[in-house]
Amino acid sequence: MLRREGARPRARSQAPAGAKAAEGHFRWAKIGFLGWWFLFGRAVRDPGSLARAQAKKRREREAQHGAAGRMVRCATCGVFLPRGDAVRIGETFRCNDPACLPK
Figure 1 (cartoon, rainbow, N blue to C red):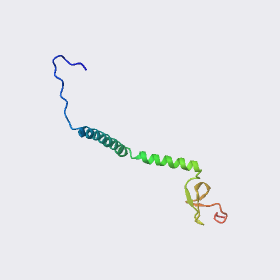
Figure 2 (tube, rainbow, N blue to C red):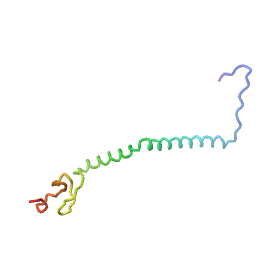
Figure 3 (cartoon, one colour):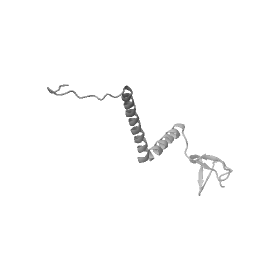
Figure 4 (cartoon, helix red, strand yellow):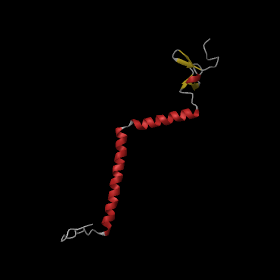
């Protein structure tokens, strides 16, 4: 660093040794605070992101396990079965059991 001729050197503050360490700790605390503020701010700004992530995870899990879809209840015997395997009669669903199907 070049100094002008005749200029006095700047005086450094003589802080206690622990003060610099405390200052560094405060700096990291400030960064941590800003990080949490960013995360919570994002959650408030875009609350649907969590719901979309959960829905995506659920769709992937259903596709992986070969889920046949939403479960419905047979109106006659009360058995729950996948909607794809049920027979829709009017507003109700029936299973493929011959005793449950209308004649």
